[in-house]
Length: 236
Image (tube, rainbow, N blue to C red; front, side, top):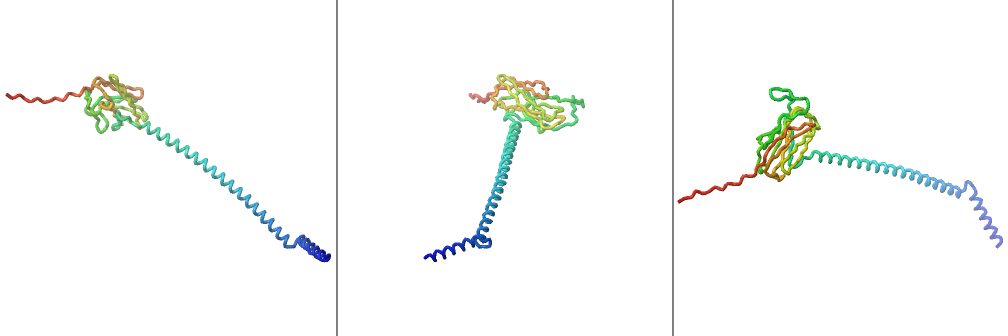
């Protein structure tokens, strides 16, 4: 029995010595394990740096997207404002006639250098150049439109033209901005008696721009004449 314990102790001692030997398989396995764990730790550290870089890139992309969205919204607001500014009221129409670079009046008389009105009139229609056609100062309540037309010389881009209409219990102003420079232009506005519920009576209208106001044009609106019923001749 005592000899058995001696043998077991000898075997244990040999195992300890073998483990402590630098050339033993146990040391080699231990070193391999440590090296593998170091590589794993290094890989995790590199992965952490990669994730951080990706997060930073995503954050930059998000900021750029937000900036682009803000820019797009600003552009939409600007375009909407421009469209609203250029929209014409339902009862007003304005357009320019053909340009005349000589800017001279009757018999070749030179016109003043600044903006000026050479003729203002009311009419029932306009021609292809936007100038007055069928001029009159007497209208009926059934007429589709009443036009005021001004022939303008020496206008500049951005000039705002205003038509002012006045009558009994009626005041209205319509505006239009010219988009180019020119020497001669027919500027016209119109109103629709039926759409505005105008009544029979006397009215006036003017057109103004750049501190200049045209002479006032007086016109009247007549009541619709009652229909005449033909009478039959009496027979005996």
